[in-house]
Image (tube, rainbow, N blue to C red; front, top):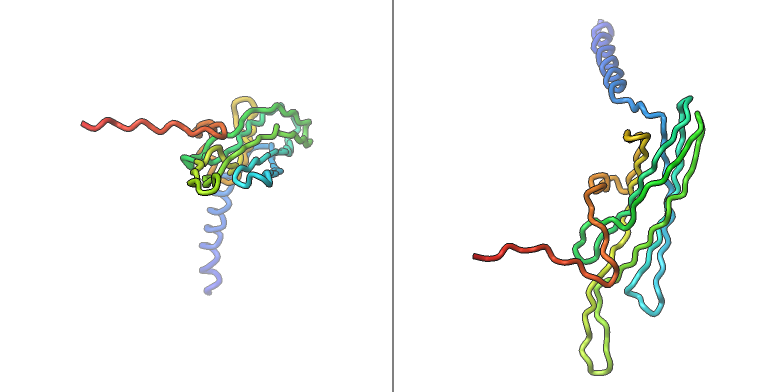
Amino acid sequence: MKVKALLPPLTTVVGLFLGISAVFADTSAILLRVEQNNTSDMNPKDRTTKTQKHSLRIYLTNSSPNPADLSAKYTYFGRDMVSHDVVVINSGAQAVSIKPEGEASADIPPATSTYTMEHYQVGARGAKAIKVEASGSRFVGYAVQVYAGSTMVAEAYEPASLKDEVGQAPPASKPGTTPKPAATPAKK
């Protein structure tokens, strides 16, 4: 008796679940995978300045019976050492063609970021230490968006929170320069 009472609600729940998942199913025939290679160099005589080099390789799979001519837009993001805002280190686009039901890979041009941490530089004996301000930007992640015409068909963000920064982040300042402070309203 109890088994019969459970069957109709169970089938209703399963039917709702399948119906909802069908509505949200991804219809893109393009799959994207991104591999990153990061290297970091520090001069042994200058332990406060660091240079980072980042490169990406994207792998695209076309599960459609039609060829795909795509554009992969990429952005390397950094964090400004002075303002601590997210900035764009490098960005661009690269064309990629994929055969029907085929795969393709593309190497994204590398980006380099250099930053100096805030520190004190010791002078001659008896001289006061000089404060050296932080400058440059430190790599924090990337975004890759793949377009077929004007339609985005695949995307990848590392970390995922950088999705909100695409198109919003300002360009990075050059190492050794400090960004101009925002204007403050005059007091009356």
